[in-house]
Length: 446
Image (cartoon, rainbow, N blue to C red; front, side, top):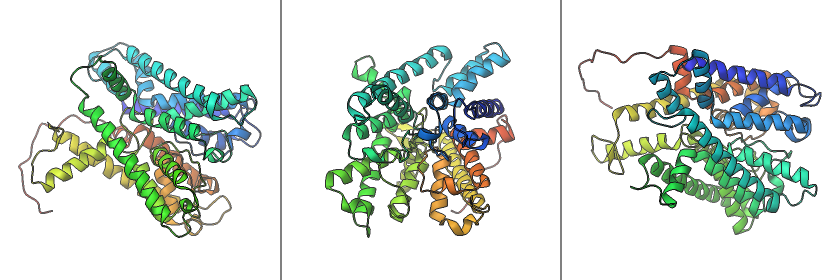
């Protein structure tokens, strides 16, 4: 029931908003609107914010925010599928199949066992990352209790690809800290590829799995490595040779570190170690980040975007067309036409939605009353819209300057992007039975 998923997601956001707006969680500067935007961003694991989380939220409020990030990172589809079973009652075969697919389990698997496996892996990975950050990362924080909380919060945020930080300038103070950069990047990647892929790779390494990797895992790993490599190289080239480029003043190792970290972070994480704006990054580099954000993470991961496998299917289809093949083949496996149609539908619907967001963003005024159409460039609006829809959280200084209309557009974009554009369309139009009539085939010139 897509409608149930949308409704339950909205209820979780509403409850979190009321809680975060309480004096025990935040200062007087955080009203219902600021709390609503922050909670929406947390549940959708985006990271866009119009408040200073480290200053305007109390320690208890920061804990609530971390819990909301965990809830969003587990996936609203997984959580609401369990809630659906409680509300509707029973455990019919079809319901168990639907819940299993929501948790990336194909077949009549036990949803409870799967959810426990997801939680165990998240606990181990987040705990290990927090320990490394506590011992070797945030060493400039002298108070051990404060350092432990900062390490744990950032580990939760990184694994869930949320991008929330407790520092006003995100991770800019730790640009040259190799441990912080490495641990955060690894957590982002592990959360982005999904628990199923991590489990399969670990099982293959321990000799518990025979027959090699499945097509899904192989494609996710290959696509992720390719995008990280291409993204890093593109950022190095565009910024190294751009006039007054950000990387031109850094050493070779620093250039590689900054480029690689932001290529990882743009895959729906939202952390930044250098200032991000039109004054610090070239248009070409920002466009590279837009492409990486739009593609996003992998199915079953904690990130958003149209997913790596979707783009991989389209690339394989293009290759087959150029070679004159009728079938789309990946790793000696033929894909069903339904898979290709779904990939085309996801990308096309997402592009239309992002363009619509950019158009709506330009219709409202900024927070100061000045029309946003004259205040922001199209690249800034496009970057912000893609960042919200792909649940990334990278910001070029636009979000806080938007009026409530513009921020509402971003909240809707974050919610739609997290649940998935096809699920939202199914909730609106309903799920239709397969047609029993097939029409005659005709030709068309393309």
